[in-house]
Length: 223
Image (cartoon, rainbow, N blue to C red; front, side, top):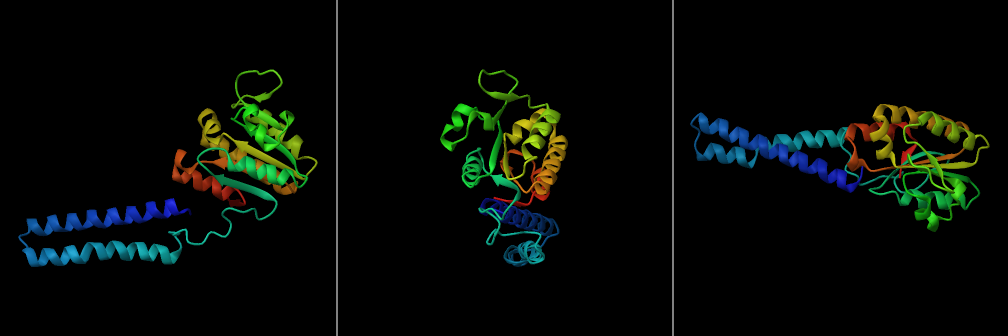
């Protein structure tokens, strides 16, 4: 969990405590309780209960405050990784780093190849997700998951490869989340078998929390 997510959990708990307190005060007021009883509630009752509930979740591991994240920000070795970012940038820096060590890159990206020139990627290493044909550019329709899967499998056949998928939100919008989750799970299995890397750029703010967690569970770790 990132610090931003930990902050959201804290604010949700704080909001819940305030709402419970207000509700309890209103109930007591309607029953004729005076200022002394109400002050006790405001100082302790509902707020304490809310804090105790959050504390229990923290102790059980249900809520991670994001203080320690040993896998976040670094590769643990071969496997598949969810790269958390608002915009596809870090994922290309990672592939540049891995390719410099000899891995063969393939980038399936919503970003035009001309805009990736700074990452030492050849045009042949990039498949642009687009419905439009472009001279000198490898393109693939975002809805052709069968074709994309076949191209990925061919690339992974020799092993020692690094695959990047950037434009996840676009793929989800064109195919639906369930299809993309199956797509990611299938790639993960192939990558593990071929001793390679799979880097998936994803913005958790652009999708439902439950969907993002499903993606995170389908890969080796988060970056």
